Amino acid sequence: MPRRFVIASMLHETNTFSPLSTPLTSFGPGGPLRGAQAVAELADTNYAIGGFIGVARAAGAEFSVPLAAHANPSGLVTRQAYETMAAAILDEIRKGCDAVMLDLHGAMVCEHLDDGEGELLARIRALAPGLPVAVALDFHAQITRRMAVNATVITGYRTYPHVDMRLTGERAGRTLLRALAGEVRPVITWGRRPILSSTLSHTPSRNPMKDVMDRAIAAEAAGQVLNASVFGGFPQADIPHLGLSVVLVRDALREGAAETAAALRESLLDQAWERRADFMYRGEPLAESIARARAMTEGPVILVDHGDNTASGGTQDVMSVLEEVVRQGLEDVVAGPFCDPQAVARMIESGIGARVHLEVGGRVDMPALNLQGRPMALSGTVRAITDGEFVVTGPMATGARIRMGRTAVLDTGRVQVVVSEGRVEPHDLGVFTHCGIDPRRKRYVLIKSRQHFRAGFEPIARHIVECQGLGVTASDIALFDYRRRPRPLYPFEMDTRPTDSPPL
Image (cartoon, rainbow, N blue to C red; front, side, top):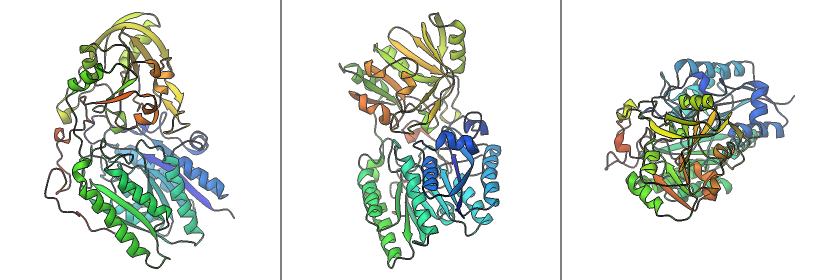
């Protein structure tokens, strides 16, 4: 009889400072995908769940997908959403299976839980104590003991922007298959260093993280461990388990594997700790960034507003960077997408070619930062109206269908402003090309992102200018009031000791 797997995804990166709630309807087009619909939409995509499905098919296994849930980063996941999704996965496991493969994020915080992934894994382990469970996690996961104790295999993305999501699922799935065949006996070991690293400074494509990640990749490739992953963590969360982590999967059947894994774990963590100061972000005032961009004569110049980034929980309607762009008189600009359903409705009602005067953005207050929404008054011509849907052709989430909601373009003369009903991270040129704008032909391209934009926009960029706009994803951690964070934690406590919890 073929083996039977349960494959599911439940993804959310929670910004506890974000004012945006995360109900069940956030986790897909009207809610999570299920069954055949989930398989049809995700099997061939560059997501970890696509990798799991590919591994299962290659092994000739039967599988079911009770849930495929993926929400844009935002505020706390509601209790009802979490319990509904967890129940769907658990109910399917109760029917009987040989193994479970889970595409999770690792930074889910709910109204009633600090560790959504750890709780899910603990419930699975209580339901089926000996069931093998493979988990693929985001590079920004906040690793906890409950995750490590209750999973059989854990792998993490090695890239940021995340262009290896499918490969991460395949890595976990292959180790799980070897365990089912009796070739290996996976055991997880992990450790953490108390570093609140900046997402603009910890990408594995550059140091200080590159050398650490490269060593982990090399150790896995050489067979020192079954799997090796480094996690930068996610700083926009006020929870007790912040930090930079290493997770290794060793083979308990191999003599000396425990000692090898422990030594590697500590060496990787010590290397990161020695570089802790380099994981902090140091930017420049917004006006100086735009002035510097204004002096650049050749485009495209990519202006990156990292203070209001959807993929970190931003509202996507803060207008501070666009206001500075207009104030300094930059021309030949495309900007967006900005999330403002009211402005979109107004432009659709007016129609293509209509001249309109309207306010854009600034609809959402951000109490955690004492920021009030401030719309920007704009005048221009409606140039395009679309359904906001396109398929990703770039290297991140390749093949995925993006749904921005209805989208409209306002042309002010100097700036083409793209406004959508929903929030979306601009990691693919499709956010502009689907509505008839070629960003490769613009002098300036203003987008809201941190690193994911590099997947689609770095290849076309003549210059990249990081812009410290306002918002709940600001890179200056001094703006945030952390009340529940662990102590000590660098950079708040400068004399932090090298370990903050005993490793497994």
